[in-house]
Length: 202
Image (cartoon, rainbow, N blue to C red; front, side):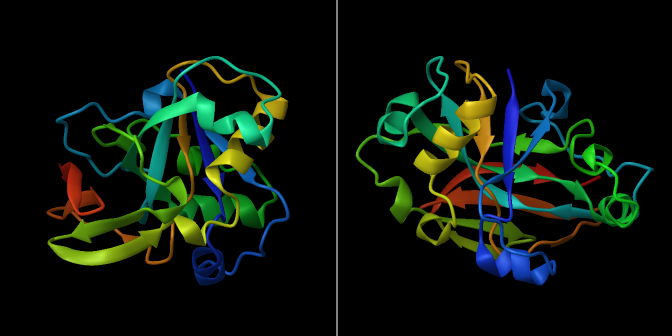
Protein backbone atom coordinates (compact mmCIF):
# COMPACT_ATOMS: atom_id res chain seq x y z
CA UNK A 1 0.00 0.00 0.00
CA UNK A 2 1.31 3.40 -1.02
CA UNK A 3 0.39 6.85 0.26
CA UNK A 4 0.67 9.29 -2.64
CA UNK A 5 0.41 12.98 -1.79
CA UNK A 6 -0.10 16.03 -3.96
CA UNK A 7 1.43 19.37 -2.98
CA UNK A 8 0.52 22.93 -3.97
CA UNK A 9 -2.88 21.93 -5.38
CA UNK A 10 -4.74 24.98 -4.05
CA UNK A 11 -3.68 28.49 -5.09
CA UNK A 12 -4.28 30.12 -1.70
CA UNK A 13 -2.22 27.50 0.13
CA UNK A 14 0.68 27.82 -2.31
CA UNK A 15 0.62 31.57 -1.75
CA UNK A 16 0.51 31.32 2.05
CA UNK A 17 3.76 29.32 1.93
CA UNK A 18 5.27 31.57 -0.75
CA UNK A 19 5.47 28.72 -3.24
CA UNK A 20 5.19 29.08 -7.00
CA UNK A 21 2.23 27.47 -8.73
CA UNK A 22 3.13 24.20 -10.47
CA UNK A 23 2.39 23.33 -14.09
CA UNK A 24 1.95 19.65 -13.20
CA UNK A 25 0.93 17.85 -9.98
CA UNK A 26 3.66 17.94 -7.32
CA UNK A 27 4.06 14.39 -6.01
CA UNK A 28 5.59 13.13 -2.79
CA UNK A 29 5.01 9.90 -0.92
CA UNK A 30 4.67 8.57 2.59
CA UNK A 31 5.41 4.99 3.68
CA UNK A 32 2.80 2.74 5.25
CA UNK A 33 4.38 3.44 8.65
CA UNK A 34 3.18 7.04 8.31
CA UNK A 35 -0.42 5.94 8.92
CA UNK A 36 -1.74 6.87 12.35
CA UNK A 37 -3.74 3.87 13.49
CA UNK A 38 -7.46 4.39 14.01
CA UNK A 39 -8.39 5.51 17.50
CA UNK A 40 -4.85 6.55 18.40
CA UNK A 41 -3.73 9.99 19.58
CA UNK A 42 -0.98 11.91 17.80
CA UNK A 43 2.13 12.56 19.88
CA UNK A 44 4.24 15.54 18.86
CA UNK A 45 7.71 14.23 17.93
CA UNK A 46 10.88 15.45 19.60
CA UNK A 47 12.65 16.26 16.30
CA UNK A 48 10.45 19.24 15.40
CA UNK A 49 9.30 22.42 17.11
CA UNK A 50 6.64 23.20 14.48
CA UNK A 51 4.34 20.34 13.45
CA UNK A 52 1.56 21.73 11.26
CA UNK A 53 -1.77 20.28 10.14
CA UNK A 54 -2.90 20.07 6.51
CA UNK A 55 -6.43 18.76 5.93
CA UNK A 56 -7.09 17.07 2.59
CA UNK A 57 -9.55 14.99 0.63
CA UNK A 58 -8.30 11.41 0.35
CA UNK A 59 -9.38 8.76 -2.15
CA UNK A 60 -8.74 5.02 -1.99
CA UNK A 61 -7.77 3.25 -5.20
CA UNK A 62 -10.16 0.35 -5.87
CA UNK A 63 -8.32 -1.55 -8.63
CA UNK A 64 -4.89 -1.88 -10.16
CA UNK A 65 -3.91 0.38 -13.03
CA UNK A 66 -1.04 1.87 -15.02
CA UNK A 67 -1.01 4.62 -17.68
CA UNK A 68 -4.63 5.44 -16.85
CA UNK A 69 -6.30 7.87 -19.20
CA UNK A 70 -7.98 10.83 -17.55
CA UNK A 71 -11.39 9.87 -18.97
CA UNK A 72 -11.16 6.46 -17.26
CA UNK A 73 -9.78 7.71 -13.91
CA UNK A 74 -13.28 7.73 -12.35
CA UNK A 75 -13.25 3.92 -12.50
CA UNK A 76 -10.31 3.69 -10.09
CA UNK A 77 -11.85 5.06 -6.89
CA UNK A 78 -15.19 4.57 -5.17
CA UNK A 79 -14.61 5.87 -1.64
CA UNK A 80 -13.52 9.17 -0.18
CA UNK A 81 -12.64 10.66 3.18
CA UNK A 82 -10.76 13.55 4.74
CA UNK A 83 -7.31 13.14 6.22
CA UNK A 84 -4.34 15.01 7.62
CA UNK A 85 -0.86 15.41 6.22
CA UNK A 86 1.21 16.37 9.25
CA UNK A 87 4.29 18.39 8.33
CA UNK A 88 7.39 19.26 10.32
CA UNK A 89 7.50 22.76 8.82
CA UNK A 90 10.82 23.72 10.43
CA UNK A 91 12.55 20.63 9.05
CA UNK A 92 10.96 21.14 5.67
CA UNK A 93 12.25 24.70 5.49
CA UNK A 94 15.75 23.61 6.52
CA UNK A 95 15.81 20.91 3.85
CA UNK A 96 14.51 23.31 1.19
CA UNK A 97 17.19 25.86 2.01
CA UNK A 98 19.84 23.16 1.52
CA UNK A 99 18.24 21.96 -1.72
CA UNK A 100 17.64 18.54 -0.18
CA UNK A 101 14.63 16.19 -0.27
CA UNK A 102 12.22 16.75 2.61
CA UNK A 103 10.85 13.28 3.36
CA UNK A 104 11.91 13.65 7.00
CA UNK A 105 9.43 16.53 7.26
CA UNK A 106 6.51 14.72 5.61
CA UNK A 107 6.93 10.94 5.80
CA UNK A 108 7.71 10.36 9.47
CA UNK A 109 5.80 7.81 11.58
CA UNK A 110 2.13 8.71 12.21
CA UNK A 111 2.25 11.71 9.86
CA UNK A 112 -0.83 10.58 7.88
CA UNK A 113 -4.31 10.59 9.38
CA UNK A 114 -7.09 8.95 7.37
CA UNK A 115 -10.73 9.33 8.36
CA UNK A 116 -13.56 6.84 7.88
CA UNK A 117 -14.17 6.24 4.20
CA UNK A 118 -17.62 6.78 2.73
CA UNK A 119 -18.93 5.79 -0.71
CA UNK A 120 -18.55 8.54 -3.28
CA UNK A 121 -21.80 7.28 -4.86
CA UNK A 122 -23.54 9.99 -6.89
CA UNK A 123 -21.52 12.86 -5.41
CA UNK A 124 -19.57 15.03 -7.84
CA UNK A 125 -15.96 14.98 -6.66
CA UNK A 126 -15.47 18.53 -7.92
CA UNK A 127 -18.31 19.85 -5.75
CA UNK A 128 -17.23 18.67 -2.30
CA UNK A 129 -16.84 20.87 0.77
CA UNK A 130 -14.64 19.84 3.69
CA UNK A 131 -13.52 21.45 6.92
CA UNK A 132 -10.96 21.05 9.67
CA UNK A 133 -11.91 22.07 13.18
CA UNK A 134 -9.20 22.78 15.74
CA UNK A 135 -10.56 22.95 19.28
CA UNK A 136 -14.06 23.31 17.77
CA UNK A 137 -13.12 26.35 15.66
CA UNK A 138 -12.91 26.11 11.86
CA UNK A 139 -9.32 26.56 10.70
CA UNK A 140 -9.57 25.19 7.15
CA UNK A 141 -12.41 25.41 4.65
CA UNK A 142 -11.87 23.44 1.46
CA UNK A 143 -13.80 23.08 -1.78
CA UNK A 144 -12.67 20.46 -4.26
CA UNK A 145 -13.62 22.68 -7.19
CA UNK A 146 -10.72 24.95 -6.23
CA UNK A 147 -8.10 22.27 -6.87
CA UNK A 148 -5.56 23.19 -9.55
CA UNK A 149 -5.52 19.57 -10.72
CA UNK A 150 -8.66 17.45 -10.49
CA UNK A 151 -8.59 13.95 -9.04
CA UNK A 152 -8.92 12.57 -12.57
CA UNK A 153 -5.91 14.57 -13.74
CA UNK A 154 -3.97 13.47 -10.67
CA UNK A 155 -4.69 9.77 -11.24
CA UNK A 156 -3.77 10.02 -14.93
CA UNK A 157 -0.54 11.86 -14.13
CA UNK A 158 0.59 9.73 -11.19
CA UNK A 159 -0.09 6.47 -13.05
CA UNK A 160 2.46 7.42 -15.71
CA UNK A 161 5.20 6.96 -13.11
CA UNK A 162 3.79 4.57 -10.50
CA UNK A 163 1.48 1.63 -10.92
CA UNK A 164 -1.61 2.18 -8.80
CA UNK A 165 -2.71 -0.76 -6.68
CA UNK A 166 -5.93 -1.54 -4.89
CA UNK A 167 -5.79 0.05 -1.43
CA UNK A 168 -3.37 2.86 -2.35
CA UNK A 169 -4.30 6.23 -0.91
CA UNK A 170 -4.08 9.57 -2.70
CA UNK A 171 -4.00 12.77 -0.63
CA UNK A 172 -5.19 15.47 -3.02
CA UNK A 173 -3.70 18.61 -1.44
CA UNK A 174 -4.63 21.09 1.25
CA UNK A 175 -6.40 24.46 1.06
CA UNK A 176 -5.22 27.59 2.88
CA UNK A 177 -5.29 27.82 6.67
CA UNK A 178 -2.55 25.43 7.73
CA UNK A 179 -1.15 26.05 11.19
CA UNK A 180 0.84 24.76 14.13
CA UNK A 181 -0.19 22.15 16.68
CA UNK A 182 0.20 22.14 20.45
CA UNK A 183 -0.31 19.61 23.20
CA UNK A 184 -3.98 19.58 24.17
CA UNK A 185 -5.36 20.45 20.74
CA UNK A 186 -8.19 18.41 19.24
CA UNK A 187 -8.69 18.09 15.49
CA UNK A 188 -11.90 17.05 13.73
CA UNK A 189 -12.27 16.61 9.98
CA UNK A 190 -15.63 16.86 8.25
CA UNK A 191 -16.81 16.16 4.70
CA UNK A 192 -20.08 17.83 3.73
CA UNK A 193 -20.70 18.36 7.45
CA UNK A 194 -20.15 14.70 8.36
CA UNK A 195 -17.37 14.08 10.95
CA UNK A 196 -14.94 11.46 9.63
CA UNK A 197 -12.07 11.70 12.12
CA UNK A 198 -11.25 13.23 15.49
CA UNK A 199 -7.86 13.02 17.16
CA UNK A 200 -6.16 14.48 20.21
CA UNK A 201 -2.69 16.00 20.18
CA UNK A 202 -0.45 14.81 23.01
